[in-house]
Length: 533
Image (cartoon, rainbow, N blue to C red; front, side, top):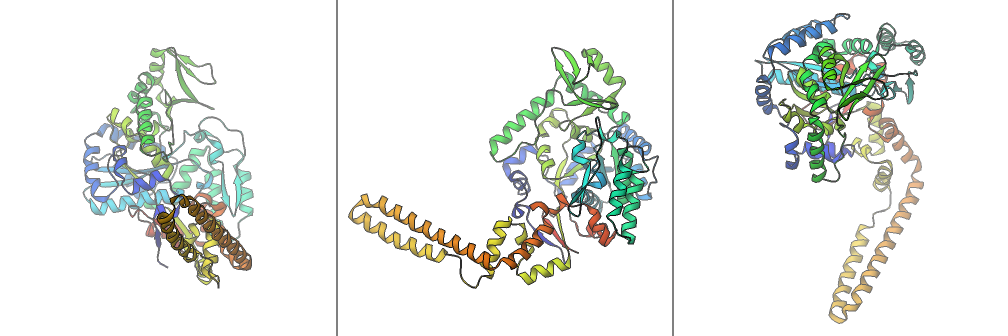
């Protein structure tokens, strides 16, 4: 079956800010560099090439080879890593937390969008190389956000005490999670592959970083994906001068605060995703990832006894850059300093906070990347599509809220008209004549006529609602079949990609599900995809 498309705005699941960005609303132009169109990449390449040094490339290549030394590397990935040392190679990057077994489906859409954009760029600009990068958020500390995935409507969860950067966590207890998950799988070849993938990633590695690198490499190495861990002393050394400025001048606080004010002034419906702190760095050592604050010239690590004066913290930064960790405000800057990156691909929430950051990049003289909303997908089976066709419901209808869906379907299939629009229009025409009559005789009657019009229109609306409710009762069985399919495709009344894990589809389709997504997803198309399997 062909892939269908719906605009992001029409899904009703994306913010006004992101929809306006996709529409290239002129008011948002100051908050991004170039819109992600194929023709715009040439200028982005030229700008990034003028800034990114060969020395930085050499550090990046050496660091990546060191990070990959414990796992088998594909020829495609090795070629990509080596090519990063050349001045004509650039990256397209996405990033994500270390969610257990990849977490929600959109993890795949992020990475495949990145892979496919690189392929498209290579076709358009053959004299350059383009490397798809996945940035592992190993320094994140929100364990509760990553310690589970959903399988058949239930959480598969890793329970343990956790502190510090999640990438450093040992994998105690995941053997038990594996056993519990494996019991829910059947004995097919696809199920065996899933079990082996989970076991080798989470039972046979020492920490969460190693597990995630192995897992993502197994899934995407054939496409040349390069996985980068920013929690690397050599890479952080490239970022030392920016971190020192953050500690001393606290530039990002002023710049991002001003951008937030300007965004708020554009539209009250734009939600500010992140607010900067005076210092947007953490201090990390074993089991610790805590904010750095400055009070009266003394730098402190919150919830610890660690303190420095200005000279001492500069020395600590110079000697141990790996102990300093950027937060959500500084991490994008770190990424763009250490990668020859052209474009960042992320979800709506991510792009919303990237739009807050451009002025800070400019103040630091770092090229701001192009921002591309990742592909979004609804996967639907042939059987589900056939059921919808028999019920007289389109897939697009399922994006409605359930109450709106029920009302629409009821009006469509009811053998009587439940839409009182003609009666209301007729009534309004009658009152138009009454307004004219009152105007010609006694204008004091205009208020009484208006009140009577509102009363009668309200009465018709009340009758319409009662009739709709009665018809819903009459068509209960039909509506239940419709909402049952919607609940399957939109779990918890949310997008499928935000709730379901890839394992449910892998059980049915194996690795061909990844191949199908790589074939279908067009990162620059700018629409939501509906793929019938």
